[in-house]
Image (cartoon, rainbow, N blue to C red):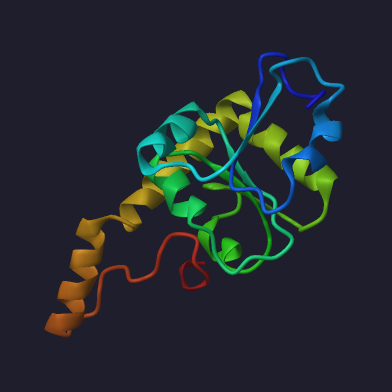
Length: 166
């Protein structure tokens, strides 16, 4: 947090699976308002408020099979910095829609967050998210289904960033 611009605010939102008091000592020495801890379920009608305010979504998991936050970040056009674990690997196109870092490496995580927030790079990543979002659209899905039904090979069956697309 100390390396970020002074107007940067870190919001940690969602259900904490351990006591929120565990995190209080970690943020105690920071200026007031720099870190907001919002423990608890986020109602569907409130989700957009968090994503609209976000410049980056950080998923620093040590292990994960998948995350419901990833498609939401895509829907709202927000780049993601995620640990290189489980299904997160398949859903972040490293350097295009965000960055992947090794799990448990706080220096790499901080570096990726700073790169994501950097001016022109931030704009490029947001554009990458917008472009990838088209591949996840209902229209694209309908096109893929039509080609399967008709028996013609789809123009593009893989998602951007997927292993078969590289």
